[in-house]
Length: 308
Image 1 (cartoon, rainbow, N blue to C red):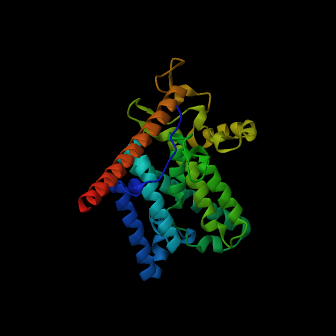
Image 2 (image 1 turned 90 degrees about the horizontal axis):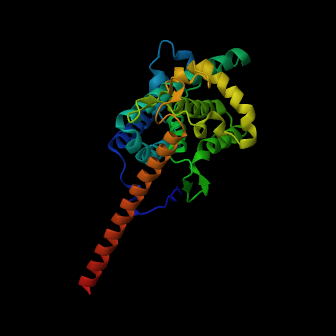
Image 3 (image 1 turned 135 degrees about the vertical axis):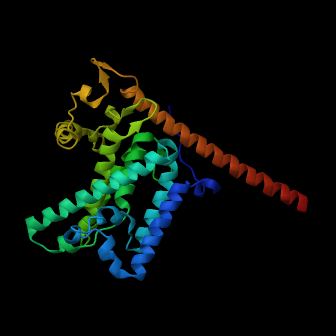
């Protein structure tokens, strides 16, 4: 099945979901609060030295954008990517994804900052205010990779499945020329990784009553060039055992087999169906947008004819 090409249109900039608009308002309010009351950053952003006892920072840091360009990117990214993912996942699953990825990302950043302090003895790792929605956005890109991996983005001429890898590669390259890459790079990396962990092992699919996506097309090694995959796969299996308590070979534990026989929807067929659903949903959205745009054009032509 060939994936459609995403094109713009008059209604491409509408159709945002209610939850995405609500979360965008929360981001804007958070930005305004820290601009009016700069001291609020110390209570809402993730400052590793203050996380204990200010443990709520693990949840609030994601919703605090300290810069203008940060709030613009986060709000627009939430609106545009959210209107693709939420209709397919469902509103409840969409919010659940945000909550879990946000918390795990903040926890990973906290542990990384503490570790860097003990390794380097530089106190700036303990007191730098880390915040922003970019960790969840990077997790969203993993969702795009899962649902419409072969969708070609008309503006960039690249397939959607490479978006998470490209963003991380750019972030790593930029980190060599920035003063404090620890403010954003760990967040992007953990957001991508935990977004994949959740979709790979935790996300429940109502139609099959199973969790995760065990397909080879969504393996951890697919984030890397093909020539590196033989090296990445054994490493990824180790991470599976450490972080998820599962191994690639123990399908019975993962709930995807029964008596040695694959359950319906647990193999590559389910992954193919998921991609087809994602592509079909995108086609329907684009068709509706083109219909709306066509209706507006006809109305304008009719008004022009009547005026003449």
